[in-house]
Length: 295
Image (cartoon, rainbow, N blue to C red; front, side, top):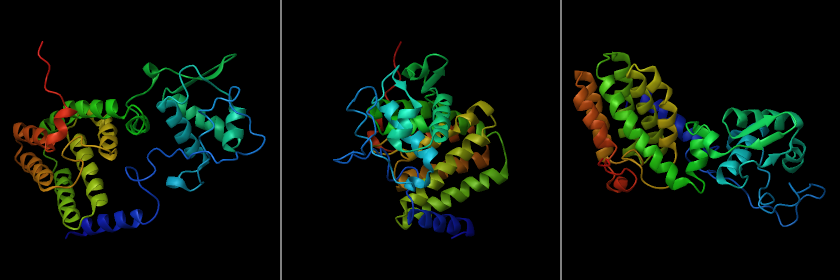
């Protein structure tokens, strides 16, 4: 086993022994409210019951601070529909409900505004924006949708988008003979092989994610590179088959290896074909990647 493979697998095990990593536990982490809620905290908008069921998370959950936790909770509530479009968000009430400071609330709402989930206007206040205004390519929103009521739509849309991005990236990458990046891709395949042999799904997933990110970077197209976060987010969500990358298996590993071989020889057609085969390794993929429509 190479030094890189050993280091990456050790790091993955270390991380796995502590806080959950992206793609693991705590995917839709709304705790049910306790039987007796905190006295003195007003219900939002006259006691809407759908808001009362969200309890405050522990400070260390997923390694997030209070700011990160509040962004996560409010973002999930908006994406899930618990906070519908045009819903007013009063900072003082949010601070009381989640027991956080005005500063934390203010900074959290700014993050959500940057994602297109809320808008703040003078004399109107902060309100939830409709889905058409959301930044649906934001990795956080991808994750929140993938583990909320819109999970089926999100997974289908991710699959279709990956089919557009990655075969093209593989073909373009074959024209860029950067040996350092090609070696790194080969290292990721080696790590995936060792991880699969040891039943280490976490290390396999991390190496897989880096493989696909590196491949898009190697394509030499800055607009495609900007979309690499989408692919990483797609690889981190779980709950049903999307592609052959969903879980470690011999076929998936072999297709990754074929992509590396095609890149090494500069064969763009072969690289593109290998990527398409990888994206359909799982036979159930046909239910989320429909056949091309006839016009």
